[in-house]
Length: 210
Image (cartoon, rainbow, N blue to C red):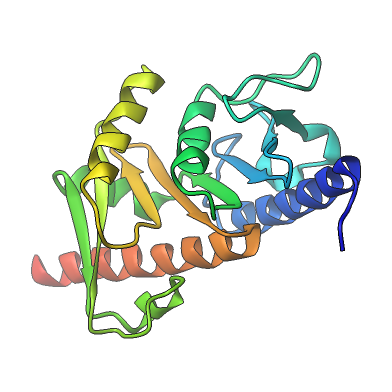
């Protein structure tokens, strides 16, 4: 069943709002941090307005941008990191949603590892779309934090160009996590799985150094 663009935008905005409340309640988007987006059928992107509390998002806190990140909603501005969203959509045609969070787990791990974190042997790896066994590993790249977003996006693209295995997210050092999926629900599932696995890695580190 097809929907009008306005109706589809309203649906995506509602999903983004529900995701924001879920993530805020878990402390993964403190203060006004983070940004979320979802792609519409016509290629436009619904994205959170910059500086809004993600635990109390309303339709007024979601705006439209085009595939290049240019605003289509008059008088509203999305995050300076918008190009990181559009870069993911441009590379992965099947991706329908991107979530960026600032959890403590992601922030700490992104500062403790070098260029990548490898997650291996965990049953919960099967929460990621297309992975059917725990007997695998997933590499989560870590990029240096950079206020020059086009330069950061270039580093992300360069790393992704070299990958053959599925990639579902990346970390920015001292900053947070970017994760995606075919829908808001899929992206949320991937994000929850990452957070559990990050917590496992942190606990393992503490046990090793106890």
